[in-house]
Image (cartoon, helix red, strand yellow):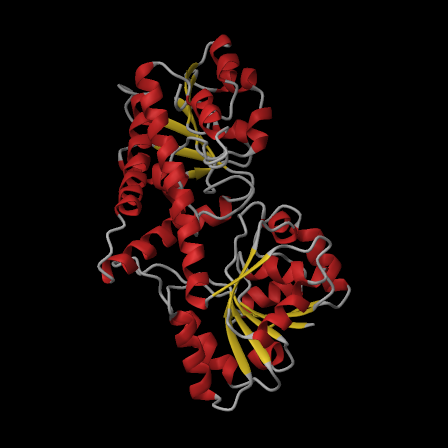
Length: 432
């Protein structure tokens, strides 16, 4: 099949690479000339484990290409996938639809034969109706079905999740569109389960899923605080709770709070929609408030470890919102570091992939280390902010020798706490 993908960000690019790997012909379009030029030159514009090899393979095979021309991407497509950003409004936190609406109107100018337009961006309930309305205003006679196809790719695991989806949700009542979707997914090595629902139901499913997972994260963080006070171990508690099949073990890892491009944006957008429909989503509202407060609390935990030290030097491991990605959007690490700097600390940060992304936000307010051992030189405390697996393998003996004070605050519980204590570190984790 011929597939046009609008937007080459953290959703559009892995999706385009994935469908090309399955044998479809994919043209990705983006307005940013620099980004398209980089992709044409073979340079990935984001980091995802396993993405580069598939990207190179399919570009070389001629199944994957990039353009700034909407006509080139859409005019021959059987399926057009909208994967542009829906950033939160800076004040109301509602999802901003300007990129969705612009893409809808522009793609409508280039539709020819029957086309399925699939919204993969996370959009508020009813936006599918608006997309269809705008397409028909521009091209009244267009043979088109607008469907909802929400994405569930975890950043850091996007390649794996594309080829091994838990489920595929399709919002449509069109039998013709269903036939196209069946063909689109028929080439999967293991055919995923496809759930067909109403378009508005599909739009809610993404928000409901992310809000539930965000609540689960906030819940285990609150349990971690409780465990610390009463002398229990949150991991033992989480394991006992997670063995209940009604609950499950995933998303029960305590930390400094959730972040990224989805959970903060989607919980806020869902809360906004609920308020405007006079529905009280008290659990979602409490989760948002608690998560915001947690990052402040974690900043204070780090500062408590250097109490009495004037202008402490704080080394941080991690800038990305999670391991496996270079994405720093709504990263707890960025917010915690910003708070530390505002309170007079000198911060030197190390991250395996996210340094450039973080520099665009933090600028020269902190120093950026080229390796973890340079980051800890002369530090009064080491704060672990992101759960990169490689952090587990660092030489704690060497780290201790480089630090001014043997002091660790591990907000991801990724280091061997007992080993650190045995080596003479003052070690503080989460939930223990």
